[in-house]
Length: 265
Image (tube, rainbow, N blue to C red; front, side, top):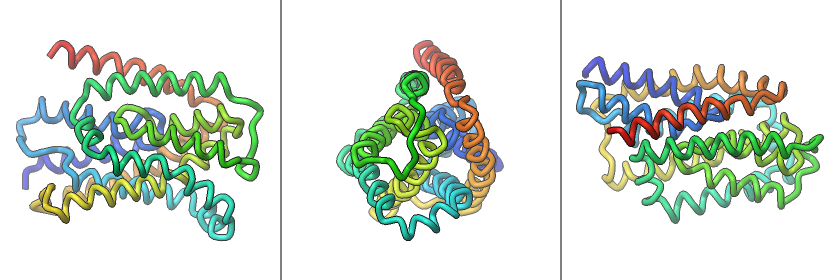
């Protein structure tokens, strides 16, 4: 087993753990990081295979389960909130199943990811401008849940941040910042879990190959989990402090650099 595979696993785990929660798009950064590793690495092995993608997402899913464990326990007796989560999950489920081939193709385009980062920046800035005094999750309507769900479906495009777009949509529709973030990550659980199931289908059908060794996958999962815990807790503090929009400027810079890099190749 080449050392570079372990190095790649660590790099992708760090990228996934940070970008899954901070509003800078984990999928977009994984596409860009994967392209950079392929271009400047001596290894010809794929750096972000289907199995690695599943492993990385599983690591960040564990982070959400740990941080929001109290909310999840309460959720078991809150049928209304469970219904709203289901409603918000339907759009991304439909897009993931019906447009899977187009989504898979998008994951091979760093240029698209760079352009989509600019969209993320726009969502963050507009969401902050439109935010109101704020309602709680107990005041959320079916319409609000549906709109947030549509933004989550849009974020299936690599480069558009799932957390950024859904939190911005929540704030724009009247949720206070903390509750918008809470709902964003509650609906992330079925979304990330469902995406992993769809990806696993490729393994069972033979469209994707199993890795020769499981150790890089295990390493990537552990790194994504540990980094994800820190990133998610940081995000919650930034949301409460109304600093989420600052990531828009990072997205603009990263998006511009990626676009220039791709156009000059």
